[in-house]
Length: 164
Image 1 (cartoon, rainbow, N blue to C red):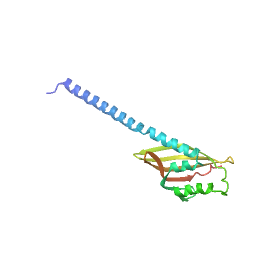
Image 2 (cartoon, one colour; image 1 turned 120 degrees about the horizontal axis):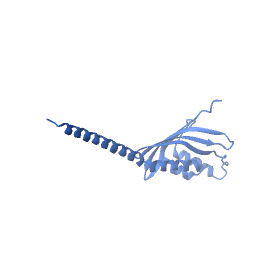
Image 3 (cartoon, helix red, strand yellow; image 1 turned 60 degrees about the horizontal axis):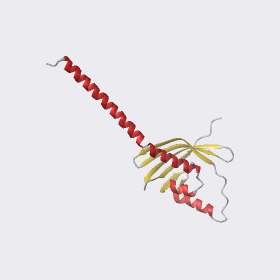
Image 4 (cartoon, rainbow, N blue to C red; image 1 turned 30 degrees about the vertical axis):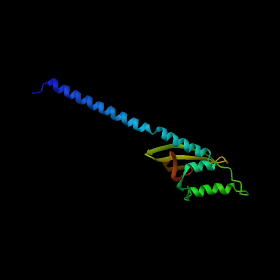
């Protein structure tokens, strides 16, 4: 026959074990979620650098992977060689001087990591030289190759103008 104090002791021990297990689980989840923070920060910094210095062909060469598929907001599909060729053509003697470019920034940046793959979504803000502002929702898939994150797919969708 069990004694009442043994039963209480076993229940208390089971409760303490359950509490301990919960604490360990939550700690492990927190450690797991924060482990990717430096990588997320690095990808966000690379995005901001790319947007800030987007007229520099070296930024495009670093950001886009060789096997990039980029769907523009107009529905055109571009590859990295096409993008790089446009820079080369613009640098040729006698090429028309490029029009002033918009200043770009990112808002609502979300980076989700899946091993050596990252899903990136953000709101692109284009501040045009005439003072107008256009916004887009962009998403991309990045792969880490040789220690460098590069975009393999990109989709840009123009947001509708605010209702008046």
